[in-house]
Amino acid sequence: MTKIFATAKLRHISGTPEKNGAADRVLSKEDFQAAHAEITAWEGHAPTPLVALNALASSIGVARIDYKHEGPRFGLGSFKALGGAYAAMRVLGRELSRRLETEVALSDIRAGDYAKDCAQITLVSATDGNHGRSLAWGCKRFGAPCRIYIHSEVSEGRAQAMRELGADVIRIDGDYDESVALARSEAEENGWFVVSDTSWEGYSEPPRDVMAGYGVMTREACEALDQAPTHVFLQGGVGGLAASVAAALRQYWGGQSPRVVVVEPELAACLFESAHQGQPTSVKISEETIMAGLSCGEPSEMAWEILREETSDFLTIPDTIVAPAVRLLARPMGADPAIEAGESAVAGLAALIAACQSTQLSASLGLDKTSRVLLIGSEGVTDPAIFAEIMEAEDA
Image 1 (cartoon, rainbow, N blue to C red):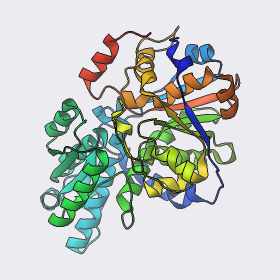
Image 2 (image 1 turned 90 degrees about the vertical axis):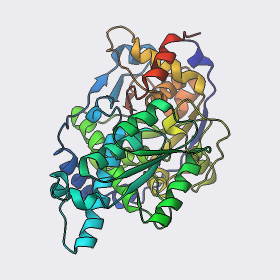
Image 3 (image 1 turned 135 degrees about the vertical axis):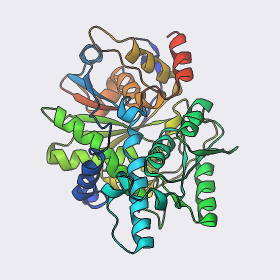
């Protein structure tokens, strides 16, 4: 185990979870069920692996680590395949039903019956890479034009992956939040439809659909486990992943639902700051994190409704422990299987390892030799060039 985890500086703040039904109110069981029924009918659907990291668990002093590896998801490399494409389909269904003045079934959109009509509806979004790739993939399947807005630090490899799926990719000079603003303004000007994974006042249906789609992943994990985890470490970003998983776990396990720990880059900690302020709070991103998918300065208000009730702990981690965590998965301990993961996938893993090196932080998080920890490996290798660069480096 590299010493860098032991010296890493993590920030911790306790949440103030007070259950008031958000896990059922914001994302209902019906929302999750509808998404599951549709997505599992898509060509190419298959559950992704839940991998036990027994040697690593023993090494850091917990009973069990289960890692949900989303790299194989629909050949797109990340859990985002479940959200963006499904939300796109729902947007198309609502708009086609309005235009044609008849209820349009998602199954008919899936079958291509409305491809000509879909071709008249342009869908847009901002992305750090994975959400846009999912949206582009969905639009290609359903026959809708797609425009994706990316910021200056999104890798060219990720941009090209979206172009290859037929998207028109627009790169701006600013950061992620500025790309979100431009996508919104140009959509309003041109009559396009935003398919975002973050919500704001007056905009909630597509983000809810995105989070409902993610529920497929959580349901797979729960059904593969024989008992509830004691902890789940979840990536931050705008909060959509964390909120969806927290809500689905609560609905599945009830009072046995695991302790929720939200992990963010110290360079983009909008949820940590929201917990500190007690309300959704944006932060200015002055430097981009290596965890490209988590470089978000403005939280989703809808996601925050769930997270403020379900999250027990908020952590920030430095970028210095991200690449070592990627390498640790790819070159595992003992008989643990090798996993090729992207930078954003290992946030929870890196935080868990570092926390277990600190007696004080372990105690604060309730981590001990009986802990069973669920991790969401949110992406595989979505940019081979970045992964190769990480793997070529050496741990200190």
